[in-house]
Structure formats: C-alpha cells, structure tokens
Image (cartoon, rainbow, N blue to C red; front, side, top):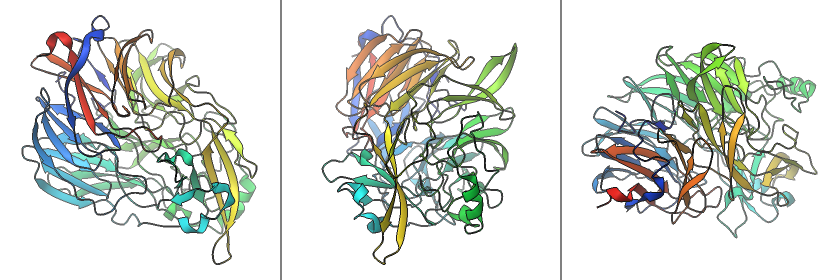
Length: 565
C-alpha cells in the first residue's frame, strides 16, 4: 500500500520513492518532530525502517530488532541479539525485511535470523559464514611501517553481514561482507577511521556471495559466489567497459598468473547492496565489492571477475545472466555499493527497461537491464582527479578515492520528474605503494590510502536525468554525504548530513525548503509513511564511524505542525 514502507528500497525496484504527497513543497516548512526513540545502542545506526499496517520494524546498531507503533513510537517488542564476534570497525546494520509473519535480519556475526512478527521470538537462525572462509589477522606485521605515520593498523578480514535483506515470493535474499582484505589505520587520537586503509599482498580474505533462503525454514535455496572458480581472470582489459584507460601492466599480470592460479579462493567481492528485482524478467540486480586484497594487486592478476561489477542473476537459481564490470582489476576500492535502481528510459524514441547504479567512480551508470549494454554514463557528479592512476611510492592523489563518490548511500528515483538523486562525497585520497619487513625478515608489499591533507572535503546531492546523463542541479554540503535519499510525490527530496542536519529540498530546483538539527549524524536513508491518513517522515540519527560523524541512537519521526497533538 502507498501508506507503507514495506521494503528496504520502498519497492522491488529500489526507487526510494513514495507516492505520498500530504507533505509537499508548500507546507514542508511546518514539519516538526512527532516522536523520538532512543535505542540505547550508539553508533552505526544506518537502518532503513520498515513500516507495514502502522507498525515499524527497526534494526539497531548492535543488531537488535524493535517493533514500534509507527504513530507514537511506543515499543511492542524487542529482540536482543547477542553477538558471537564483532567486526573490526564496529557494528552497523542497514535494516530488516518483513514477509508474512516473519521479520528477517542479517547480522554482524554472520547470521540470518527470522523473528516472529507478533512477538519477536526467534523462529530460525542460520549461519552465513559456512564454507565461505574465516577470520584472517595480519595487522601486526605492518605496525612499524613508516608510511603509517604513527598510526596503528587494526582489523581483520572475516565474514559478516549488514545489508537489509530483500524479499521475493517465498525467499529472503542476502549477501555477506568482509570478503575483501583491507585494514584500517587508527591514529589513536580520534575515532575517525578515515585515517587510512591498507591493502596487503597475499592470499588473505575469502570470496563473497549472495544467497536465497526459504522464508519458512531458513533452508538455503541457492548461492552465487561473487568470484567464479573458472574464468575469474577475465580478458585483461586495458580500459573500463566505457572506455576509460586503466593503469595496468598486463604483461606482468599474465606472467604472475602461473604463480597465483587459485587467487579466486581469496578473491574478495563483498555483497553490500540490497538487490533490485525485475519480476517480469525474473532477474535480480546486485552489486559486488572490491577484489581481495584491497588496492594491492601483485597476488591477484587479471580482471578479478566479478568484483566491482553490477550483475544480473536469475532470481530463482542465482545463475549469471550478464555482468558489467565498472572497474576491472580495481586498485582503488571502488566497490559497487549503492543499491541498483530499476527504471524505464527513452533512447532513440524507444522505451527501454533499464537499471542504474551510482558508482564510487563519480558516474551514474544506466544499462539495459535485459542485456547489460551501457545506455548512458552521466556527467561526473563529483570532481575526478587522476582517476585510475596507479598508486606510487611517492604517492598520488586520486579523486574519488575509496571513501568518495557514491558509497553505500541509496539513490532515490522520482519517476514523475524523471530524476535520480545521488548523495556523494568529495574526499580525495593519497595512494602510496610501500614495502615493509615482517618480524621473520620477509618483505611485505602493501598499499596505503589516506585522505589527502591538502585537499578539501565536502559533499554533494545531485539531481541527474538518467535519460541524458546530464546534471539538473547540485546542492553542496560542508561534509561528505553518506546515508541515502528519499524522494516523494510532494516534490521533495530528503537527506541527512554528518553534523546532524536533516533537510528537504525542492526536487525540481534543489532549493532548500526545511532543515532540522539532529543530535547525531543523520547518516541513514530517510523514509515516509502514513498512519490513519497522517504522513510521517522518519530518519535514524546515529552518525558514522568511518567518517568520524558524531554517534547517537535516535530515530526521529516528523509530521506537519498542524497534525501534532
């Protein structure tokens, strides 16, 4: 129903668009908080709430699940999740899925859990790490390296999950993360982990996957590994599919192939994105993360299929229909992380079913969703500098970097105005190739990427016409944007910033119409819904550890002042 927000992306197309229009450009200035809840779990609060029949289902930073009265915020039940282990960089969860009498959550300790929708009781609990690989620790060997500037390397490559699952018929679909081997650098003076990321040569990490499970029993129906056992090396492309040159030494890679014939086993390719599903064609569209090891390529020759790709899978079997690798042999951390969105576009007088994805590269890609053919690549929505340059010992500043462009933030698509709204970050990074010596005297090759101290950082919300690739308007923000966008039939675009600013823009012009100051970073996708004819807008304000945004634990629901009690 239009009054609900029943799926993570609002619909199977992942549009993040609502037909509700009681709140519109003429009255949004009167929007005020209706109710606020505090989950008691600070940090990593990135969830998209689900609202069905007046009940909100919400995951917290620590993988708890809460059911609330969506009109009042009063809790109905709470499931408390006891973590078996914790990822290196904190626990973040991006939402639940609801089907029939069940609520589903994928957790940071690699579980897929079904809860009773009426009570929150556990119905089944299945592991996601089975056969995928285990934790790998390699940080201590690098702590003395001069390139780390006094920082400490932290983290591990292990299996976990944080995406909001997708529901299709009698299956719940989810993927795992942590497959790509990359380590964070902490300075000890701040919790901001954007101090740096390190990739180490070697057979570390594992390979990611997407899988479908029976909603009633938790039995796995199919599983698709993001890195294939055969053909993973690809054709050694020297350009991206859209023609941008890549800094590759293909001769050296081919020579190294004989030394690393099983690089696919630790090939990476985390699953970050809630899939979009084309019911008519029986296809689902997924994004795949960076290859493993991150940045460092000496032990993974070839194109590293299907890392950094948008892939169409048969929704019933998980078999590949087509794949578009945005960046073959990625050296920069350009995960396909923002969820794909389905739409129709007109090309040469024909209406073509399409899928679009906002890349970390700074481009919006629009493809034929039947064939995978590229229809359009947008204008760059963030500045591009030394794009696809190879890291050097002296260091090269590249924009977008691993934390730039469109990260995991969902895009919103307004089908009436035919505009895609993309939240992005301008955060240039310095990439340096280094060598260190381990305790046993062996040499270790690694690549470090750190935000460039001499470059400005900011964010932008861009309205892009996917038919032409042109940018209609841009709204610049003081902080890099991460969290996601909501578009409504009321002509409004909602999004949040790292300093807690939550705002609404006129979708047609980008004019700011309303703002509210949250107590923590509003770094989650907003939603809208209605109960008894009253429209609400809600957003989680919990900050973001990787960007150093202030942590919190609040979910705030807004309504028009005239509708408040």
